[in-house]
Length: 284
Image 1 (spheres, helix red, strand yellow):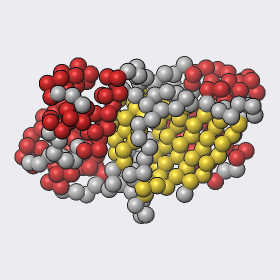
Image 2: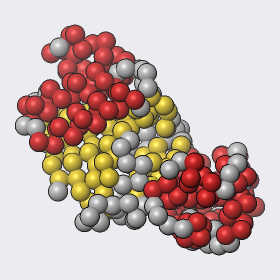
Image 3: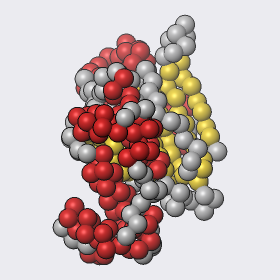
Image 4: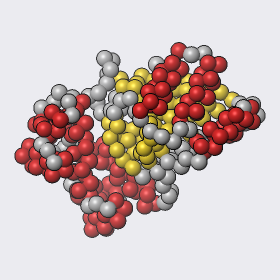
């Protein structure tokens, strides 16, 4: 199911819009790394996985709401095992242009301070606490609202996201150069293949580099060796599985790309200062 509503505040400017999108789609039906010249608010209602936003790659879970400023590359990679009864994920996306914010200030000068606070933010942020709760309720109510009611809800959302408290950074702007694009493509390669046996030959070939050059490049761009990064990523993915699924530790080990349970237990304990079983009990 999808509901797509475009609002135009400046009739002569077709790019000045507010766009509401509520979807139920299969977990693998996602847009690859992309960016747009507009603000985006993303609410994951059902699903979990890993996201890339700007210069950061992190796991995500259902319930989170992210605000992404214009021109920051981003994408979500959903896990297959966290879906609804129909095997689908559910999310709401709201986009609105910078010009639309300016038009709102012209129509409602009282919103100028709110819009200034939003426009001054250059980082992608995730919300917590009461602000997150209020955003969730407002965005869910928009599903059944009329177009006119959604405009009212959008203004409420703008007032909520302008509050600087209860947020944390989940992505920063990146310099669009060849090296950054290569780094992001390697991130996506890991996101899509961490469950499998990834060799240095395969990773460097994917990046279009010799192995030695690839190792130097990756360490320079991330501060970690490729295999340290891959192991850390697999550990974080396994943490999500331990908390969100009923898989055994051995099953989580295999599903997150490790091939040996004793080794998995050792590296997990080194990273988290507890075993996978202890981690599950401590966070259940």
